[in-house]
Amino acid sequence: MLQSFEATSSPEQGPPRLKALRREMAAEGLDGFLVPRADAHQGEYVAPRDERLAWLTGFTGSAGFAAVLQEIAGIFVDGRYRVQVRAQVAEDFTPVDWPDRKLGPWLKDQLPHGGKVGFDPWLHTAGEIETIEKALDGTGIHLSPVPNLIDRIWEDQPGPPAGKVSHQPVERAGEASRDKIARMAEIVHEAGQTAAVLTLPDSISWLLNIRGSDLPRNPVVHAFAILHDDGRVSLFLEPGKVAHLGPDPLIDVRPPEEFDPALRALHSPVRVDKATAPLAVGRRLEDAGISVTWGDDPCILAKARKNAVEIACTREAHLRDGAAMVEFLAWLDHEAPKGKLTEIEVVTKLESVRRATNALHDISFETICGAGPNGAIVHYRVTEGTNRGINPGELLLIDSGGQYVDGTTDITRTVAVGAATDVQRGCFTRVLQGMIAISRARWPRGLAGRDLDALARAPLWMAGMDYDHGTGHGVGVFLSVHEGPQRLSRISEVPLEPGMILSNEPGYYREGAFGIRIENLVVVGEADRIADDRDQLCFDTLTFVPIDRRLVDTALLCPGERSWINRYHAEVRDRIGPRVGPKSKAWLDAVTRPI
Image 1 (cartoon, rainbow, N blue to C red):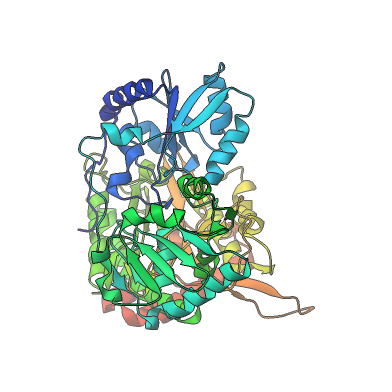
Image 2: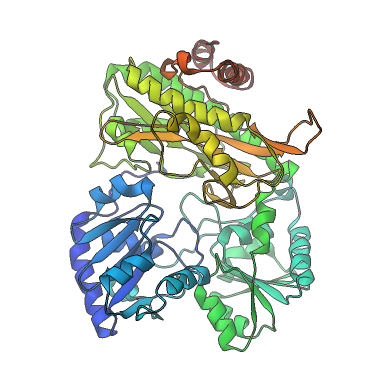
């Protein structure tokens, strides 16, 4: 199994570790210390060595941070994790609803007479620290960069990742690394900069057409890089990891310990991304008298605009994955109503059908499989301790994906186990209406995710409901399953552009009862010109897996929504039917009949 079901932390571990951290804080003269869920590369996913937040608190969500003071330890989580955090941390930690409650105001309330709060400058971006310092202006509270205190007390901390690097051939990348380097170097040169510092693993992996195994589920390489304006790249990682690159005059591979001296040897001005680079990078340059120009990582947007080869490859990956999902759902529909399955058995079966494709490199994240009330935990991960039976009359939410060398998939389906109630069907249909609204959307070029997010929520809003997560995230091609900068979110200001891949996943969660989420991946394309010939964009669906018709209240649908479902299911039959076995094909034909 790629996925394990062991609990990786427990609440009782938190209090003694918190006590040890507070002793270190006192020794350093600190009134507080910040513990983010981040590493020096500022990616969403971290290696075991960098799971400091989980080690200290027991909270295993993919976003959040702790602010530990001598009298209170706040753990800040967003709406996705407010149920989960209460189950995973001890009473010594106080959950804080973030971002409704921001760190600056919270610190002002907890330290009314001022104080000194430490942080590791390699684990926070310059933009993040700048925002906090502005909120603390005039309060007498000061942020102080210090060595990482968690590393001092974590006695069995794992070592740094040392996964081997592989080559992503141009047949799947669609562009040679030399050409990418030249394009990105030209951006730096035209901006009048001598170099750009790259810290994001997926940016570096994309630029050099390499893939790695340093992080679970995401085939990226842990490294730092300096892109010079003359088209050279200095790559900082263990040299033995990249033997396949061979001698390349454009790429100078150096050990990690040479990154800091290399920064200090650069010439002004140097481009650094305030939103993604650790604060320590900018500070190192400034200490050496090198001027820093804050600007976006030049690879981020280029990577998000998938080329024709990448899109063709990821379409094939989604069809392969869709066939595996149909085989799985046909099995599930036969077995689940018997009332004998558990969540772990479902996760195990789903991984086995993906493995049977003989093309699965890894799962793209830990499968979320929540039965009944567990479905209301947005990022629920089943363990041997939480494993629950799947009972008739419940909803089962399955959010999963695969990493294939030609594409990354992410799909959620919510299915009825036995007969569904009117309440379940009503909630499901409103979520489905939101997903359809995004799928059918057309919009003027230049709009961002924040401009479309409300389309998915409107049917829920009309019923007094909503969900506390974004509607969609960016997705890479055999890279990170969560990719920026594109998002479907109230806070995303990045214009959507052709070639960007996003998830489309509205949901609804009723704590203690059920959770509903329906997710397809979509790619931005140019819409056909109609009416007054305006330039518009649209989404093209990549995911082809049936939606549970038993949960659809057709009385709530308008003709356009009904037509979309029937067209989608016809396309699922046509594309997936030839790829599955006879029994699954018969099941697929039955569940995709027109409504």
